[in-house]
Image (cartoon, rainbow, N blue to C red; front, side, top):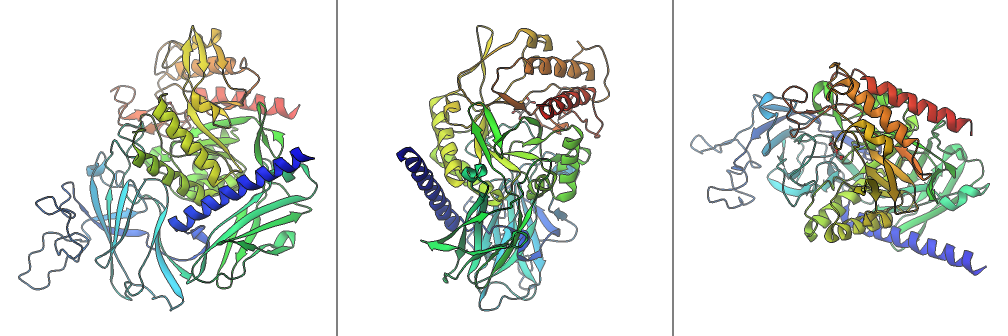
Length: 618
Ligand code: GCU
């Protein structure tokens, strides 16, 4: 009797701890959940800009930060007060950038630009009533943003791939001609996340949507709705969750799922209202039938509607269980980029293109590398029934000994989880990629694993671990593997080490008795370049590579649960400078820069078709 009681008490305690921690951080963060369901005014479109590589708009000639009312600061009006005032900055329609979109793809002068660009938008606004507040919300700005409205600083944010919002102080918003300025700086720094060195293009700018959000004085700031793991074994399922209000009034909160004829009142404990609903005829979110339910969260003055899939993901011994059924991950890695237009991907149309390509491959999972992608990817994956690995850019050799860097990584982890915790498609939170094994790194990454679990203990936590060669055995004993739920590694046997036939006698030793996932493997091929299979950069070499890799996968230990090869599309990288076969591209895509399938595409697809057929026959 005791063990069950003990176990469930432990679970409840860890659940409560995780919720309390995430609530505390939510309240502190103030990120508004589910922007699409709010009363918004879009600020997307034409923004005027000033390129400012010398930071003249921010520092005076003695390199001192300009005071808020400094008339030469680029956040202050560019209109001279009279005919004698000297103004050395100004915004005009001669210099326009589209928002949302990276600047690199909008003008050849920005292709490699790393530095500051000042964005400016003038707009008229409907003023909020006395019992409303207005926020400005950014889907993402790479990398550092300072936001000013009508000459007053609203705040700053670092991190190029996660959302943030600032409340607009009452009285600051005008009905006419509001002067909104955003300083965007995409320079790389040793103590940033990611750090100086990455194998992707440093697309700068306001890369995702900008919205004004009007909310009641007390509004629904955040919420979580999920299927209780333990109830997957029961006939009656349990949907648990919580709601956080922002504001003075603690009003009643109800959760409604009309299709299930369910409506329940949440119960407050401290500042959070919790609920737990027993459901008889719940249709699970599955890969074949990705069922989404309308969920309505209501308080006295606010109402937020979402579409949520209910499923569970867990590890049991050497298997990953989706809804308590073993699942094999037929994955593919994806960068957030449209190669044909050499730009950051963003929005539903791009998501349908990228995930449509993954579906052509017969993939059932995508690893969104190496940073949180835009929200549309998760919403489309929810509706298509594709599993998602979502990752923060703790990539390669981060400044692990620096406590400030850990805080930056935790902030991005929290913003990623806060934004997407209600997306059924996300099953894995990843805290990093290929970080070098040493004590400060493992302590740093362990902290992130624990923080991810504290913020959301309904999903798996992973990271791409290190593998090394011990007496010609590929050995996985990365100390971080003791903390993650699955053991994931990137390996390039036959591209970065030897030739593809090295796979034939490769032996693998895994220290951990956990599911084993290959989070990357791949080889480059210049699309359309054909030669014999020993000729590097040819499609035939890449095809051979995949054949050998797949034969090796078939010989993996029984904890092998899937693979997400590197990568769906060729992508831009300033690190790839072979003048014949790269020219600033990493060509490991299974689709080339124009979107054509390479020969290796068909090798992987055939493998996935076999795996799917084989598992169906089980
Ligand atoms: C690494 C890394 C990728 C990189 C790839 C490559 O595993 O995770 O970001 O692009 O290898 O070398 O192509």
